[in-house]
Image 1 (tube, one colour):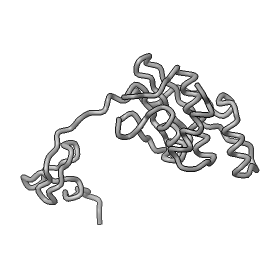
Image 2 (cartoon, one colour):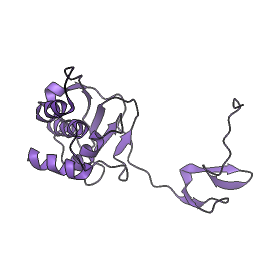
Image 3 (tube, helix red, strand yellow):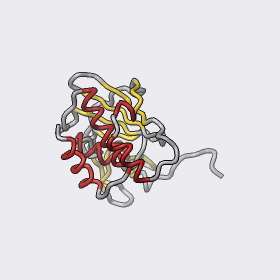
Image 4 (spheres, helix red, strand yellow):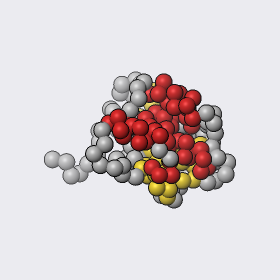
Length: 176
């Protein structure tokens, strides 16, 4: 594994260098080390990110996790935490970024994270969420209001019509 090439790949994907991309870079490297991962051509590697910040781009570039393939999911907690799963081995790990020393500039933070040892940057914990199933394929229907094609999981039956979630009236007995 050529770490410098992976760093450059992450930066090229993300578009700039920042402490956030370094977080995802180190999380991906640590996951590779702990779970013996390689780039996921399909859904062999799964990542559940607890944030939608810059680091997620490094995970996409390095490990091949993506929303479109269904192997990058978000469980928004606002934490710099990432759960990685290897479908082949059944192993998983949750990496939680430790607090860095106070008073660092952005540049100092970048170097502290990028050049640090992953084991010093992250707490290794058990995953909280079970390995998600493979991504499903859904039938599609045409919304009888707007005419747009919508996946079956997002169609609502209302007044005998199939409506997308944008066109369907929401039901909430507590609204004013």
